[in-house]
Amino acid sequence: MKMTLSHRYLDANLDVLDKIGFPKADSLESLELAEGWMGNPTDRFPIEPFLTLLETAAIRLDDPFIGLRMGHRFRIATFAKTGSIYGYCRNLAQVIEMNARYQHLAIDAGTVEYDHANAGHLMRFRPYYSDQNTFRHITDLVMGAYGTAYRWLSWASGEDLMGTRLPYDRPHNTDLYERVFQCPVTFSSECGTAALVFTEAAMSENLTTYDAEKLTRAQAQLDSLLNTKQAAASLDMAVDAAIRGAIQSGRVSTLVVAERLDRDWPALRKALKETDRNFWARVDGVRQNMFIDLISQGHSLSQISQALAYNDQAAFNRAFKRWYNMSPTAWLKANPPQAARPQ
Image (cartoon, rainbow, N blue to C red):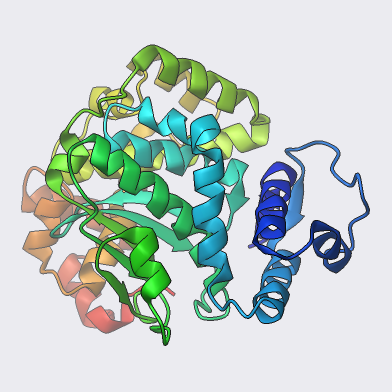
């Protein structure tokens, strides 16, 4: 998958890098861009040359954690202008849904989702790249910005971040991570996803800055930045994230999902007509993907049936036969749990 960042986001990060001590002129030379290079701010730039720039800057400035430092400073510099949009949300669960919908306007290197299928409440960043150690600067850039914003928003709900999980080997020095996230930080190259961990109260308590009217205006502005193709992809991600959240809450219906997206069902139904799948086909697809995740984590079929919000085991079995044309027990014999983990 081609990974990109918008020209606007790239330019903002080059400004941050310049303030850290790596001149912007040197960055432009490294990226083979001329002065006055930026045309349409929403145009895209490939991530790989940007990663090479970060590696070069890290060596020259003797700063192995430059991605984390940049992400943290980027959010500090821009929170009043762009991060405050998150403060308009009802709670942190809605903030995560906003991130899932709009993140790719800035950087398209992975997906964001709200995960509370197991113990805890997590904002997960699932990178498109599999070599987590090589792309550590990109993960740090993304998570440094998210960690800073969510820490402030958690305080606004009267809570603190419970933890941060990063998908690469533990570095020799973790001081900067602890200062940025201000919570326990764990590292594992086997997990494949980065995550921020929240209390249940942080997810459900209204933010003191919640403003439905301002949120609606902010969403309209962000939607205006999306072209038709991007809007369709954004809607796909947002609907799937809302369906997943509804499943995890145990209540799946058109009205529940529409409410999670801050739309009424007629408006959402109209938007979904532009996509290839109807609503319940989407629910079926999300459940199938969740099944793969849960079975790879060692859950039993009965546990998975409940986690996917089926009314009974028979309903789960019928759905399973649609997915794989065989019963769950027959599938398990052919696909032991260790073989079920997505690649």
